[in-house]
Image 1 (cartoon, each protein chain N blue to C red):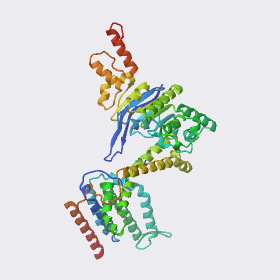
Image 2 (cartoon, each protein chain N blue to C red; image 1 turned 90 degrees about the vertical axis):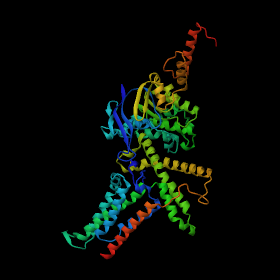
Image 3 (cartoon, rainbow over the protein chains, first blue to last red; image 1 turned 60 degrees about the vertical axis):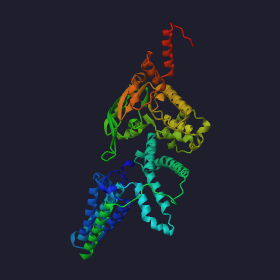
Image 4 (cartoon, rainbow over the protein chains, first blue to last red; image 1 turned 180 degrees about the vertical axis):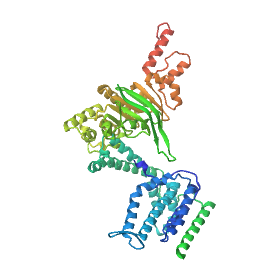
Length: 267
Length: 291
């Protein structure tokens, strides 16, 4: 059941998007989000949508993946849409029933919110789908490196993130295994009663905590054995270097963002 | 009586993603009640995945599983009862211990079955006796036991449910040779005393061959064969090609045979090898053995 979670997962590949410098990818994703949230008219969304479609096309990933991502969020999307429709009472009234008013503004806001959230998810998943966690944290470390001057522990921060990300799949696997083992002993996960379900968590959480502590200790020992001492004097095996493709993509993103800003300001 | 039967059982992982993989591929199997089955195959051959189908933890992508002639997926509400009938001990089962005392951990399964306090106690003591845990150990915290004892406690937790089929997934992984011997002997003893069906998954042929009546060999998700232990070892060379190490004594006998000593095709115990080699020398020296 935990295998169904695909947000934040990495899908190995060798597409144009996979090969881009992760630093550029992070910055471009941020620019894309700005693009998406500019302006209040429906047409201001077009730039973000076109940009996202281009990136998706370049990633060569199956479209099914994104459907899986959006599905669990459907209830939230519906809630926002319904709230927008009920509480926004300005604009042309299409239809009225008692105090309930269906207005033009309400419908537009609802549609805009849904489109924005969906594209936000697709865009940011594209980043994690095409960038391995290691690359991602490495890029974040590089992007945040100016903060070192302010004595912010950028390296430790990145290392912590790398370790946390690295252990998500491991712990998920482990949880799956423990759940299966306790199910095999008749634990009540399948019971419809909430009380039974809550009780069934204890036999999962305790072994999971025990093994997390064990893993943490093992990892710390292993790091110490290899003389890990933070980033002082540490060199990189893979040095990130911006190539032609990165610069072209960045310029394209910049142009799209400028175009979006111009359109919003002028109209 | 056939206790467990599969029909074209197939299971695929992560369908529709780049990680798609067929782990179990059209397996047809029939297991008689009371058999001690050894399940072997190299890493990734699908043996563990196959085992998890037998108590309904995994749902087959296609195909059917019958326990006592009943399709286990015909009624979802019966799955929990099924898990008490088919007990599954996972790899490294010591990592699932969670209770305050060993006693309470072993009692977890029987309590879930809804047995009375007295029945539970009886079951716990019986299971503890099978794996040779003392009463004193039963009152300790499971986290204070040694590795081998933890493993035993976890196995006892499944034995205490008195399943008709007991499946053990690599119960000896990571133990020293003595610990391995002990656990395997305890399992064999349990099989003998209770008469239930036991399936022992392992990639060590040596372990399995000494205890199992029949062997199920898995290769790349497909069932390679399911036959009497002796028959399986006749195909020792094929097994070696699949990356399975046949027992050393079998390898020696094959080599001796290739050099002209007429031995049986399927020797997998040292005793049998000694007997046959002695017989050969007896006939050669006119009935006299020198040593």
